[in-house]
Length: 562
Image (cartoon, rainbow, N blue to C red; front, side):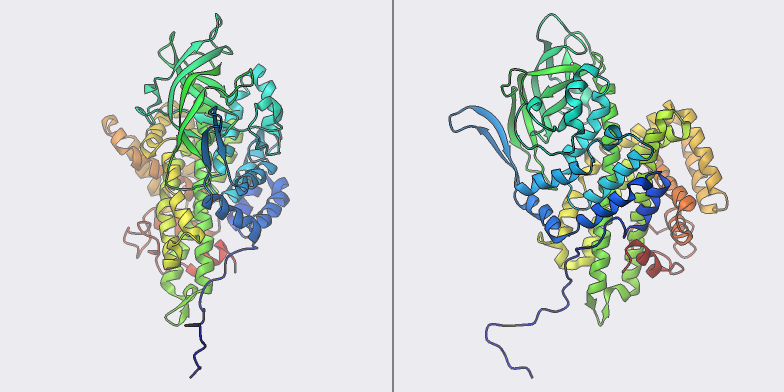
């Protein structure tokens, strides 16, 4: 018997070492293959360098630091001046600098070439596995560019700063800075997603009115994300139109004074702590109308389409990050006399999660390709962008919630403490289902797109039929979707979630059948589309219900090689 050493009660054993110093890109076979298919192979070396740099212990520590030291709001200076200043931990600015250095705020616009959108989305996916809060201003800046490009005079003053790969954290008028960030201000207390109920008022500053004219805005915004941004795109009403108009509202007015945007408070929100979300009031705040008067919602929709894609990528990244943490944990933790990774039921759970993660990855990469190709007005690409994007936003973001919980459970009690990354992933998982349109809004958008893009939908479904040949379960799923869409029109809205789910699952299955390994594709189709012989139709409801006919260990090894 070992003698007792004073001051000790036990020896620390069977605890899992932190996961670090691996390559986020090179270890992800599904992503590597998708980058090549999307014509972004020219960016592969940069992605591999970034994938290695993002997992060094020093870089991983930035995510923890930025979320332990939340931003602080200082509404007034010591002399009583209204300043609405925000103070962030240095880790936050280093995270933004990393994102900016890779061009993830502008790459397809600043460096247009074939595959640029896919290259940007793949890089964004890597960074999203590190920290989520810093993605918000990056996404909004990225999504604002195609909107602002339509205002040539204004964009000429912004272009260099929007495209810059430097991060300039100084709180100055944007003409004095080397780079800038753009945010969004849409929702109000009374409306939420129903932005047409907005009441913020805009009055012209002088006799000029309409597109390109200056206005004074009075009203409020209930969610004003990243209020430290150098400008926001804001919806408001003018007296001459029933519809909303869109305005470019800078943080500083043209005379250099702080614009009359009062930050009332920062939201005490679920999820990441690193980013600031706020409530603001406009007291005759200066803004410039962009787009046509009364057409603010269509103007801002272009921005929303890009932010919704980033919601899909962000949720897919949370799933991937949680998956590799769960696999790493299972490889280094033993229970009941065996490593967790060697236990059949754990292998089943991890393999099921791996299928879900790979399906999410190939889906967002296909959407990235479609965003690029749809500019040529190709019907099939247009359908992926216009119909499948909201379906994917609904489905992948929903799946991330349950996925994060399952991965946390693999860690057990250690996953439930804030010292590790699992709790942060879990707290963050719900946001993408809510932001940029909740689940119901997305599903109704799918229905609208099916009606308005009927020719594109037909082209997409014909292509899916071709890919489904030889896969009875996939063909049967397409039959069920067609039957649902051809049902009584009065019942379609109530079925919108089922339709969106069917579209997302079929899209994922088609992509895996067309481009993925046969064992992954077969397992996904059989278990997600209801044809597994011993599954009884219950696969997919909880992770770990895969039939024993599939090689669970091989699926896990593909997902994250040992």
